[in-house]
Image (cartoon, rainbow, N blue to C red; front, side):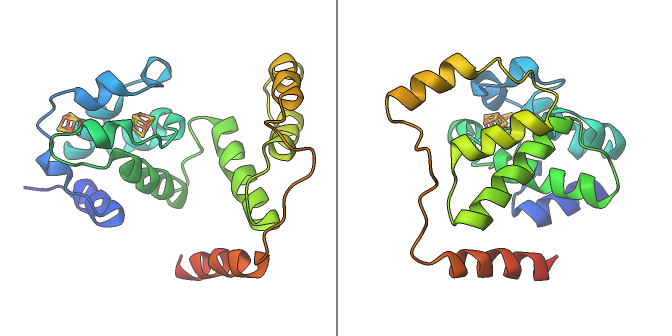
Length: 177
Ligand code: SF4
Ligand code: SF4
């Protein structure tokens, strides 16, 4: 029988996590698993056992970068990235602080930049992130200069022709909460 947590996560992320038979393929391919506490496979197990508190306190839901590697490897087509999105949303709604403070800041800045300019602008976003986060200010400077010199990071943000429509998408999303 599905517990309350499993039902809610299934509904919010449009998944059927009970199909997971813990083959571990998702965790074996996850690029950030070394930094995680449990890894995607074990986290799903905790959801299916109804371990709300441990799941919502976990750093893992904040460290997932949404790369979809797990989803492409899963024999049962479980989209764990969507599940992680749902778990983050549920953790915040229940008043849990983000397991990774800087990850939440990064999410918010990233969405804020897209909302402002209509698309991402890495240099602007990372500059803000460095100032506001606990990450040492200078540790990515050499890599940043290299990217800039190769023209990979534009100095000024490109503006979309329809920024208003992008802002409307954000407004609609907020009104559904
Ligand atoms: S790959 Fe799919 S079935 Fe296997 S452990 Fe991960 S979520 Fe479960
Ligand atoms: S989507 Fe998240 S959990 Fe899945 S492989 Fe990527 S980082 Fe890992």
